[in-house]
Image (tube, rainbow, N blue to C red; front, top):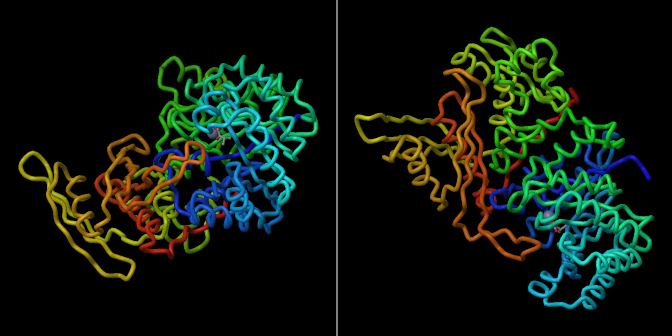
Length: 540
Ligand code: KIV
Ligand code: ZN
């Protein structure tokens, strides 16, 4: 059996389906580029039948990311389809432009799903699988089939369904623990049983896809791999429905850090992990808990005195992997007020960012303004500036000026000046429960895009009173636009995430809100010329 584990990333499908993770097409394209740089083997780019926009986003990814012209490895580009002709047609239409296209189709096999959701019996399920896998195979040589809710399905029935799917032409058999129900021992046993008892499985790739409802997704995925699975389905930061999917960074770093235990390898450039994590968090508005393994703000922090003492003597006392191995930078002083453009460029290059001249100019201008207010500019500060300045959709409304009054003596008031895409200036002033509330009300009075604020998170990039503040918001639109979930077939109102960074926390809050609103306006079709600048990465 090969020692290579394929990494199948579903951030843009299972991840994006989770409430609040809606991304614009330009953002999806940038995430796909980042995943390709990370070295993932398969990018599940979306669920094309959900809407014409979803289909178009997958099509662009297939064409642009699925056909690299710089000699880099082309990832497989995959589209999800329910077992219907319409879904499979749409998936094929979306992925066919990729050098390596894949159609992924699924049907539930657990008693509870078959009885209550599908209202089909076992025989009907088997017939549908045979018919639709064959149909998908008539277009595409690479077809993946998933028996949804396999974790709660009768193993003997699974062997039968999977055997028929193989005969019908499936090349990858993906085993999902859809509701995150199994334990590692059970899930490993399920995979062993499938490998032992499914006719024809020796010529296919066995894949695992675990959800994290009991916090066992990574453990179950690793158990599945140890039992013989050679594809792991994951998302960046573990985003996904409910408690999420298996986190890419956890599986990859477990396989790498404990290589003597697993004896397996992946094609991931682990130094790109932190960047990918930040990008996905900024675009989705889903913040990362500080103690999250590998990518949390505290993942490499050592607070306790005894730990710090040990670290100073030998970092292996409390560190099982180096922060640099995942591209995480230390909060060190790198640049100051007198640093020039060349110094900034060199530092950004060493962090893995190769910016075009115009992008560098933009970031340099922000850097100078920040250096006037903050003496020490650290690597995390620079990364926040990049996110704020470059990883934003080209804005429809930009902040042109903000003035707030607040405190214990009066009514918090904000005056906001916005510039629209035509360059027209709009001014509004409002009172609120605090300066941020007042500023948001003033923006609402200008933009007139009804929404409700679902999440507002403030975070200091570094320590100290002059720290740069990062704000992440999520808003739910009242624009009538909905996202269709492939599995539950439920439509939920779309939510949009926004990100802003500034030493002034009210300014950061306003930027984050505008960034979310701009995305919403793009989705509503108010402004379609949006493009995210492509940032060329270099391995650090
Ligand atoms: O969790 C699940 O069952 C899925 C399938 C579509 C693979 O996401
Ligand atoms: Zn899933």
